[in-house]
Length: 383
Ligand SMILES: [Zn+2]
Image 1 (cartoon, rainbow, N blue to C red):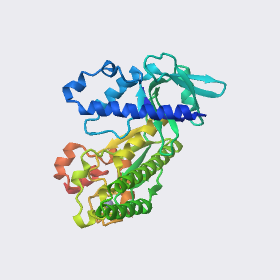
Image 2: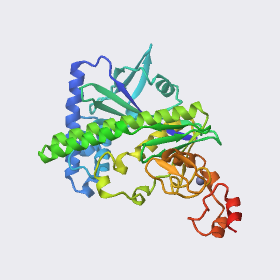
Image 3: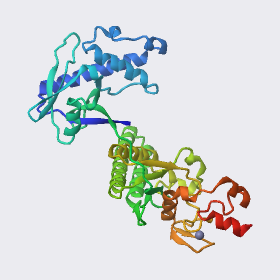
């Protein structure tokens, strides 16, 4: 069993102006408490309890969380905004008719919980599971969107069954020409094209340079946030499509194990300085974490394999060749393919490509025909 934790973003329904204003006022107060904490020396910070802020009118359960949140952010010098948050003991979920509501008391000394209706369209199943005791409630956070709407961010965790064992895999390559290439178990290879992504990267990089030169730091930050949101959105879309594909094909997803990969892939400085060409241009760790999360929720297996030689090995005969941009041509067997497709297929069939160690020694090192799916035959040929 694995545990899946999800944050539900639920807009408050018919939140009157007085309450919205009260949320906003208390959030400002909460932020100032957090900034007071940041101003203290570290030893004093650790000793803090809600009693240290007995004069603050926010409920002690909320203040406790603020202390934890402020202490957890070791790199922040000052909070511009710290949303009110409290743990699962201080809020409850109800359902009347079709409407869900959450209730909590915000003010210190007032035990009464005020029910607030939340508008729910997409998370009904999870909320029902919460009411039925099949899921566990976590913290609640009151958050205001940029448009000024208030949301309850509720974290919910539940046990999900482990993914079934499978021998069918979709090989996913973080391409150098194409951000994501997926080799399906039955053959066809699917590309997620980079044109739009490179475009986003370039445009934003040019704008950022201009703004930076003009000293407009606030505008730079805004621009960076916007770029990050667009990229996160694209990663959500790609990971969603990948997991849907895996479900449709009854297959698992096999990725490259990316730990430590960035240092090893060298790129010329001039190429790297172009935001569209920079190989570190895409947050693959984020994509991987999205894929893992969505796969877990959908019961799709995820596997990670060593990325070495996946792009250089010929998927057909196992020889090592250099790729030339998009083209992969094997000098031994003449196999021709799109370089990223070849790599994705290698990842998909990775364990078939592995060679026993003694064979590796026999043919002499990793550059010989050792990484070979038909290794036995090749070794005999060499011998
Ligand atoms: Zn070949």
